[in-house]
Picture (cartoon, helix red, strand yellow):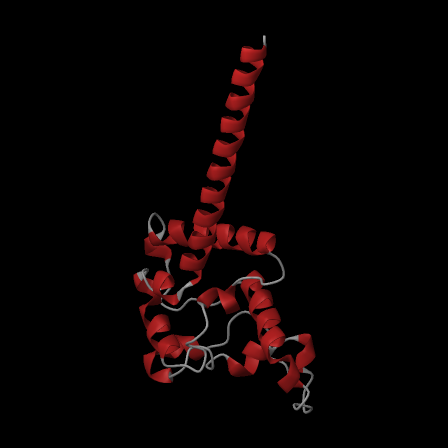
Length: 169
């Protein structure tokens, strides 16, 4: 009976240690995947992003990862859900829906909200210096669309046309 119990204890320990090892490997792999898919190099693998990537590399925001601006930063859960939804859409559009991909991609309403929140989060202290309009309610991209992606030399005329949002006055 003692030998059976000892054998079961060893199996249980082996099972637990194997589970811990697999958990650590999955966590490390997930962390690496999140970091890799946040990078500009990853985003630039889709040909539709060529011009955006080129202008980004010449901008004042070139040291940031794409998802520092384009994904929620409030929690890991919201970031994962947002990235999964956007990534699924992007994969579909770049494969099966490629004939429907526009020349100029405008941010969706959900993306605009995320981008605005991230602009405000990073630039909150400097926003107090701007008192001629209330930028605290959003609207950063209304006036500053060109900033994160640098030079206008890479942008077609359609890029400068307003998206589906109202400019603040």
